[in-house]
Length: 287
Ligand code: SAH
Image 1: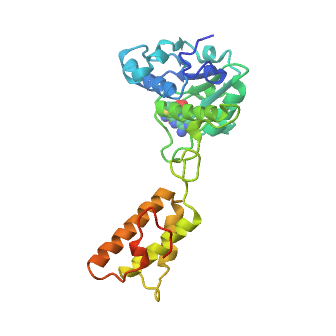
Image 2: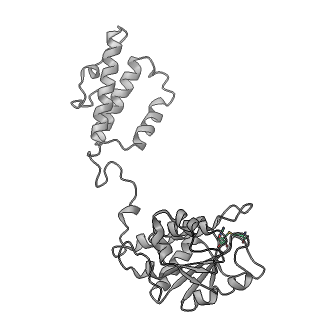
Image 3: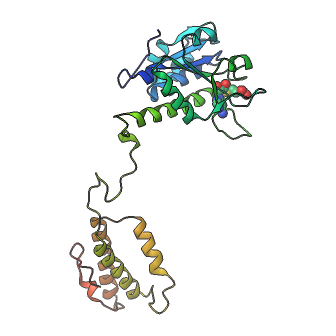
């Protein structure tokens, strides 16, 4: 069997068994761009059916650091040859055909590929730049994959279509790592209160102390009138609550408020409050 040019992350069956098949590619630069797209996503098993020109300078130039994928690419003279030992074949197409075939979206195709990769090679077939895959070629596929692009302009550049599919395969692979535990790459964004955040989240009384201080400063500087509140504090509360403030952020904000009160007082128009004398980091929220 053709040996994968990679894998970069161990000899994972899934990555090793995924075969990207390009049919009669006319621009060899696209072959290089495909190699790069594949290697970025941890794949390396590339088959070329009757390429117009390969190997050549343009393909290696566009491959950048993925020359190894091109070195190991297998050139064959028929699609039949590229698919003979495969257990699953999925053909990609930008448009529907006369006789409808089962069509899946890229994420679904990645699941199907992973499900079958344990039993043998899985081929993803890509067509010619100007005319795609023929009906006969598409009929050799178990499923068709359509990337849900703009219906008025549905055809992606060949290498971009390969990139989309390889990305979906990689996302599926990463999700399946570590006995079903998500890869660190897929973890949701860390926020205050989450593991790994550098400062403990602010407590409710600290946040309430900040809101009280903020309201007092807004009154001091004549921005806010208690008799005509206009939901100002409600909206400011919503703004700061969305941020899920941590303790250091509270201290910084209270320090700023104290500085504003001092400056306003120095200009002689402060209505002076107890909160005005508090120091950032020591504020007890008693405003
Ligand atoms: N003009 C051709 C499209 C060629 S694009 C046509 O009308 O069929 C080159 C190849 O990129 C296609 O054969 C297919 O393999 C892939 N491709 C481009 N856009 C795609 C899409 N929206 N969905 C799936 N594959 C696509």
